[in-house]
Image (cartoon, rainbow, N blue to C red; front, side, top):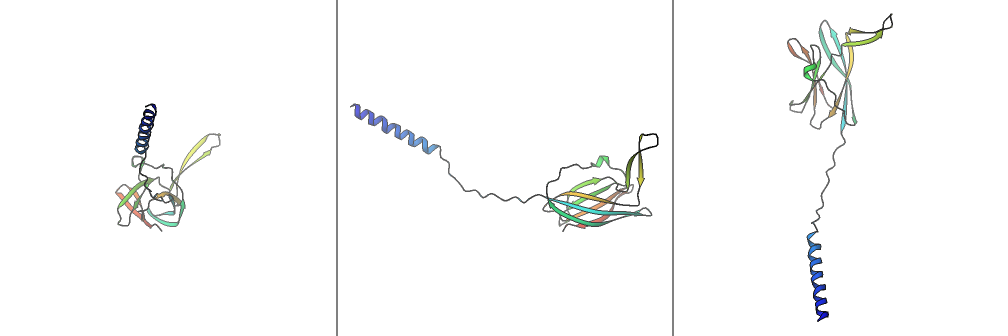
Length: 162
């Protein structure tokens, strides 16, 4: 009788262990990891010129490289007449993003005057170079640069992203 009780206990213990081991298992499904493309930066270098109050912008070059941009952009509330806005557009010319930059023809220089104090002077240039750093989106196809004027927005340049 003792042996049959021991066998019953062992069998019950074995049955409980078998059930518990089945409960804890999850079906293993092989998941494919999608490879995310390396983030890209786009550098656009432009030349801006002013002839008789008419501004023109021409592209110098564009450079693509791997990297991620730290966002620091000028908001619309801080813009003034003469500042530039640039739009990132998709292939159907739908706006993806809008950003602003200060007028590249207005430069502030700091210098030490004759009495040894710092002084600031605003220079109004006729030509200058400026750069745009962008986090390149996969859908981005065009960059449009506009000038903010007292009459509204004036389109100055459209660049195809290559």
